[in-house]
Image 1 (spheres, rainbow, N blue to C red):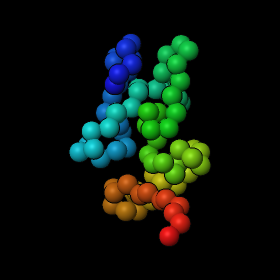
Image 2: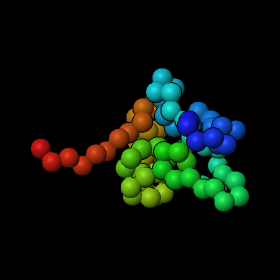
Image 3: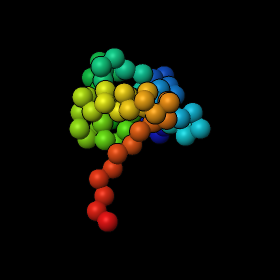
Image 4: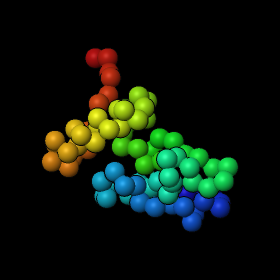
Length: 80
């Protein structure tokens, strides 16, 4: 983390595999502290798909992860 003053909020990412060494900021419904909110990966969301599609998609990816024996699910649109 290169932004000074945020070090106290940095925690391991709760949904990323440990070996990926990803971080997030500790938050409550995207609120970190007065005047500071986070979104996407830094807020602890599970995948790019859920970031783009919203919180409903986050729940869906959590369900897919559970169905996939704890392996995080990723869905990417890609033209061949």
